[in-house]
Every structure is written in C-alpha cells, then in structure tokens.
Length: 178
Image (cartoon, rainbow, N blue to C red):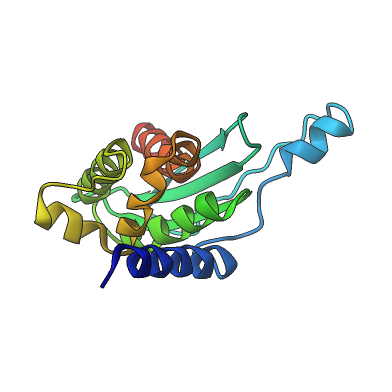
C-alpha cells in the first residue's frame, strides 16, 4: 500500500469516526453560546449511573480553534479501578471529534492503569511528528488511534487530537480523589 493510499484510508477512518462518534452524549452546556449571551452561572453535571462508582468530569477548551469537550468518567471503587462509563459532549473539528470517539472505544471498560498507558502512548504518537511509534506492540495497542499519526505532522492538529485525552486524564484524576 502506497503512502497516498494509507493517508486516504486514515482520512476515511477519521471522517467516519467524526460523523458517527462513539460515547457522545448531550449533557454539557455550550460554553460558546453561554459566553455570547452573558454569564448565566449554568452548571452541567452528570450523576454517576453506577452505584459503586466515583464520577469525574473535566471541561477542556482549545482557544486556538474553538474545539471544546466535557469528558465524564465513572471509575469503579473496587480494585482494580476500572472505567465503568465514559461519555463526552462537545464540538469541534473532525480531528478532535474522531479522537474522542476512538479514545472512547479504546479505554471504556479498561482498568485505569491500562487507560493511562494508552494515553501515554497516544501522547508519544502525537509527539512523533509523523514518524509513529518505534515499539510495535505499543502501536498495536492504540488500534484505530494510529490513524492520527498523519495528524501528528501538523502542530495545530496535535492540539485537536489531544483535547479529549487531556479531558480523560483530568476526569480520571478527579474520580480517583472523589
């Protein structure tokens, strides 16, 4: 498969994931609309749907392009700590929306340790500037998230791809201290 064919396939995966995002739920206020209509003090909170889970929520905003997301995670209270529920709400470019969708598929149901390992691997991928990951097993663990290797060539796209992952990391940290 040529580099052009591979790039075309990556673009198709990203477009499909952004058009039909997994894990998306409507629960967060649209901060752009709220700011334009004046301060309202509105807060959005998703309650834990699992009785024995600790919820965590994080709002992330990319001022460079206007992408924003609120990530809500519920982590089991028993060991090993597991991501029992992961949903997000937000808007942005196809890169940020596809990254959120693929991230949801990758980490939902996994242990917190596994999710953080995947976050670290994805961060390394985005720092590779298009070179990818040297460790084949690490690359395999990212599955469909490897499609963002092409996006890692462009600094403005890196921020878009990492937005949801930053929300995941922060929301898990909040759930663990709850």
